[in-house]
Length: 159
Length: 159
DNA sequence: GGGAGATTGTTTTATATCCAACAATCCAAC
DNA sequence: GTTGGATTGTTGGATATAAAACAATCTCCC
Image (cartoon, rainbow over all chains, first blue to last red; front, side, top):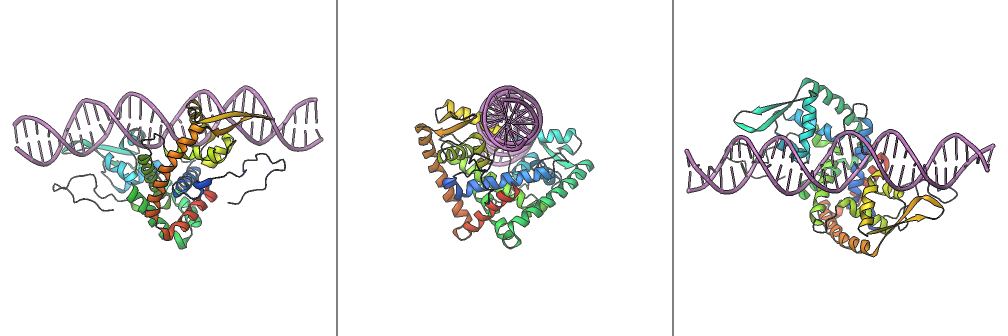
């Protein structure tokens, strides 16, 4: 981690060295920082559209799986189902998704994108692809597949 | 991802396949899921102690850098400084940290662990080490250094 | 000295998130 | 058929998080 030279009075200039101790080499801690940085980077790109990364993934999963239930969506998304309730209410109110009752099971909803939702998803996908290009550049083509495989393994075995 | 056989009526049993579409191969999405899984795994381990991963890192950074300011701590932790205000208030109220005014600069606090805070950190470190062993097992010794280097690179270049 | 601009920590406001509890509904075993 | 247990989506309570605005304070440059 390159850092700028300290200001001449030796006081804080926003980059004074911090001793990370054992954290420096902990995968868990570095995973959190990397995810946080990636999230912030995406958020900058999608700021003008006004949606954050989590919402983008939710929309995409609905678009990819028309008729999906809220519970299945929450699992695919790695979030509790109660987290989705206000989010989907908001999407529905803004006309981005349709919620229809399932025939034969009156508990579940079937979720699907409206044309407006599909258009918004298209815009978000542009941001996401730009973001992925940034990530690919940082990760490097050489290690990409291996890196991705390890991330998936962590999700599968620690979830 | 192994999944149990579908129930014989073909309906949801909590593991029906979901089409991830492009998300499947996006680093950003998989990074989020992996971090989420790692976080949840640590939370299970530290549940009895009653602190979550973010707090553990905060305590450790204070222990490692006695006298650190809140702003420097928030940067090292990858969190906004306003996020720390209620957390540190809670730590101080519970006698885990000491906040003393800095001589010569009446804006900043100097943070340090109390003996009680140090004891709690010790317990949390035990959990964290167990968690790291789990992560090491999943990541594999062979790829560990490379994986860690990529995480650090993402933090440094996208933050 | 004196002021312009930067920095520090707090407050406010708005989301996001989980967990536990809940009502409605379904399913399977009897 | 009935009924006990499972599932679905919602609600309420708690914590976490960021952004913007703010008051107090410091620094730098003249």
